[in-house]
Image 1: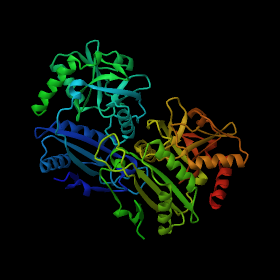
Image 2: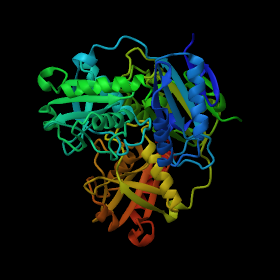
Image 3: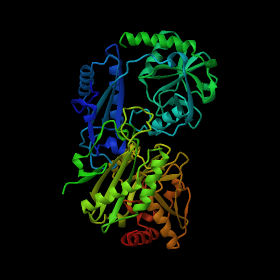
Image 4: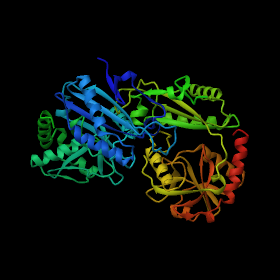
Length: 282
Length: 282
């Protein structure tokens, strides 16, 4: 079957889905997005994703977008595509306007979705872990809003791959570990599972919050706390989280082996608990 | 006549010009642009704009784009539209690819252009000047590359207008005056015409470089030198430069009157010299 897309209420082959060149998403990156995954035919954490989408829209002063319309669009695309393990990409731009920096008030947000089949073997990286590099964060100052201002993430993901690595982690000017190009970063330091607190520099990841909840359920000491790159180099364990990744062990950072270069035990426990949660439907 | 667009070699009404939803310009802001103006039926500074476009493409590791193709496209659109004082917007995205942060190697850059009629009365602001606000710079760290990572510029232009102001100037964390949302910033301090040096935080503006050249021709003391917001508040004169603006006097910053709230004499001399240059065709 042709790959499908959703465009303002209509489902069509992705090759036929196009947007006007004066869409502000195209000319200004004036658009927000979400990525939702399904497991065993069920959408995982749909409502938290819709919550975050609404927050993104509100932070950017978008015209109203009906949550019901978006949810129905997601469900319609998901039903039509009949993919058990699907990845649904949802992008909403502010609308179409002759090019001008200041946005007009009367715009109609454009809603676009694509769906992909993510079924496949579980990558070996879930057991053996990944190696990453770091770079100073040069993204914009509102990475808490899930927008398409993604060029630095795209460039740094590509640079990682060119170096035979899986990803790049952004480091603050003060040396704090922020997040990877499309994933939150965790480290186990002095026995505690730590991740960057929510602020304007990281995405409030859905999987991140699921993992923090699992830490509570599993009685793992944990916290939202800034930590440095030096602390990451010396961490007991490290991992990334994202909707499309789940929990991915990090075993090497800038060439420094983490936890002796093998997946740590807390990472393993969280992976197992996450797998259970996913199988239960979230 | 319908507003025209150029799309990968074809000229068509702008309403019919659309791009695939999986264009990386749409999903990642993975695109660069230029804006070229014509005066009296002649394109102004076409080659410097093409130089900068080539630099943007190279900095982002885009696949090769023929300068000749772009130039011919611009000229064809300009000839067809028959607009004497035209603004031509040129956007080149890296290409179309199923959504993935890391870009593939074999993409075909998408070339899109629109053209608008900028003819009209000279706005009163060229004589009476504009009032602006400032905000701490939260844009990405490569504003020297002319990309569509423009959401902060769009938001801050709109915020200025909501406050009845003309624009917003971005200030560095160290308190240095960088540039406005789509214009370079100049100040006359201790008799010298100053502007932010070229680095990763400002656009290498074409009009900026024309103005520096005019300072040399007019024997005005000048320099590329960092200056603080406090120095701007106390400046003798201030102005913005951009292709679409030319030289626009700034007479109020964050409520502080500059030069007693009237256009300064050096600004006036530069405006006159710029006008001459434009009439001569650059």
